[in-house]
Image (tube, rainbow over all chains, first blue to last red; front, side, top):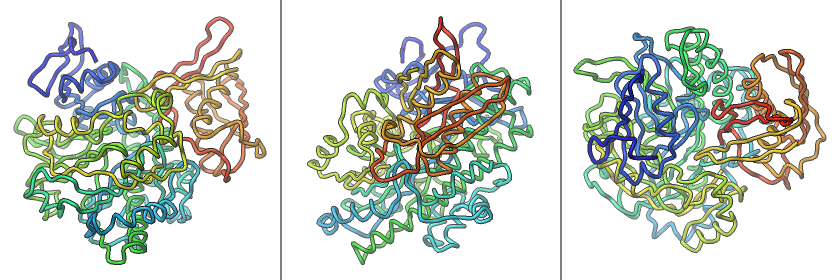
Length: 475
Length: 135
């Protein structure tokens, strides 16, 4: 990205000045100069297009890990007021609706657990269906699938997958309202039949990590974290059902926008007013997909616990938090001193409620919402906490963000060699796809340390702990 | 008929080329499934017939790619051979392949075709169909 096109507002906040004739709202870009320089210029183009959509409140924003996506940039945040003609966009949510991370904290210490990591990696790889073409062991009939879409993780717990205590630490207590299974196509439901309890592929993973560094002792204590402790992060989403809803509605909303008189700078922004029949229809389907993702991560949590119990009979895995990063949610936010109900799109961005927010579980209310910035399989991840200085509709970075394309990564790395190199560094990778491993090479991602540090310095969230990967099941 | 890939940060931009618009659609489908597996090793033993209505050429490309991706996932299959024909706004298609089995290379799951960088156009004698697919 060419920084000369931007105006720096402070060290970690930039804007794109309006040109004469521009009919768009403000654009704000969070990040340091090096992070912004490393971004493709398309990020700026895409977020400027978002700023021209109807009913936008405040600015269209990008987070420090932003990169070129489709529709919205990945790392894009935008809030719309339905009462002011505000829109909902399928391209602002993405195909992998409610993709997110479930983080589990264990009572295990690296010193005791490390001798069994090879055994653990093999058992997790055998138990967790991962990668393209892999199906799960749960087959649901149409009526049961509708119950998943209405009940989310709460449905999964009722079926015996995990504990009711998990739900306190899942966004919306594991079940979002407003889901309408009837708005989900038959093909979407058929695609999901064999995919409950599966990880998927691409950047999805199940990782066993060690807490290597604590930045904030008080918050770490509230989150139940200490150095040397093992934690598990499960990164996946709504699988085939979400993908199909995304594809169904992208085309439907692209056609609706024209019919409803919305001028789109690019068709990839396919959207409709929240209050239009098309907007409401997508909202109902998207909420169903969110519940599907929450149920999926709950099932994977259960499978992970069963596997850990085989290797470490004394293991206890508690849910630290479960957060989604591809959603549009109706939330209350204060704008110019008034509380307004807004539809906040977070495309590759995480919600980060500040301390005191009423939606936070009691244990975390004094310290803020846990936020997870997932890094690559060779570097590490961060746990952060929401802060009151956040002016991005309580949003922050979700990952390291890609630094190069998948094609470039394929040319630069060989999957098998990479896995062997990582094993020498003490990181065990299990995957069925050497192509996938090469595309996900640590070097293909931005420096996660820099992203987390800038996220903190920009006032979006504060660092609590750094997690180093030890075992990674890649999709 | 040929296909290729172009740079995109997070996802993959595919291009299908052919002497007819339909051939370029078939080449684009080939490009998509070559991300998922080594398509040369997939036997076309099961043929699936598909059809859809779409007057807009560019949206038809997206609908076509998403239809075969959805059908493949529904049936637990991977496709290697593609055929599509347009009759006014109606599209008749066939995709052939086999069920996933040991020995088939596991590439990367393609979630769907997007409207980003979407174009269907003729340059000289060659038709090109392109878009970004989400992986």
